[in-house]
Length: 333
Ligand code: SF4
Image 1 (cartoon, helix red, strand yellow):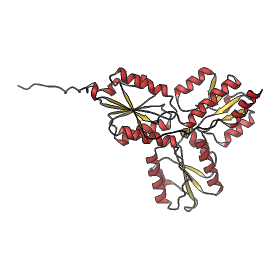
Image 2 (cartoon, protein in one colour):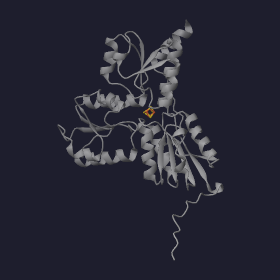
Image 3 (cartoon, helix red, strand yellow):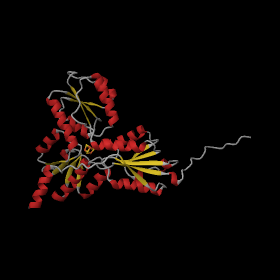
């Protein structure tokens, strides 16, 4: 007689064997911090409503919080009443958008991250020197639209190494590349290598376009993902750098990695049989959402989180000059 023993049960590791690792750095970068404070101060100074073109940063909790205080998020400037105040998001806008705002008599506050502005300057300079510019990035992302708008006759988008074969340029000796600030460092370097194989005289940007915050968060998640059964990345689905953190975690060896907007999106089934959970967050994520995830884990038998530090960050950006000027005037008046 044979006996069906069925599927062996998944063993739940003892509590003593369980660990939570917390990436450091994680969460807010200097550009996001500046953009969120810009909208808060604009609301204090000018009163509601303050219009914001596109999501100020790609996080639905941040947007909902600012909405509750009187910010009105619009997709296009045609939705903003003439003469009103509008803030441009951290991802940057093209010169066309600035011109449109001027035509409508809008008061503008530009919260574009200075590291995105730096890429805009590089695009203008390469275009001025008549290079064909290959912009590595994702089609439809606001940052890519803003950067491409700086030199529309010179820039073409390259999304992956597979795109490289189809590129046509005017002069193979005058080709430069730039990138979106929030890409995977490793994937971007693969794309650059493919471009360079076709155009050996390819000109590099003067400094890294992938920003310090994106790079640091990818390094940090690699550190903790390697031996993890599960990596939880806190961040919204339209946040490029958050989505990249999931990919980087899996490439680094995590057995599973999931992105969640907050603790309510964690599936308890992910924790079955898990010993080590690692947690990180994208550059537009408030720390309270990470603390919510840690509280959820503690309630489910993963009590203590250990921070793993891989880089220190101290960068702070000054608020946009037009806002500083109005704040100063208000103080003096
Ligand atoms: Fe600026 Fe980088 Fe933050 Fe984007 S992720 S806002 S480029 S610091």
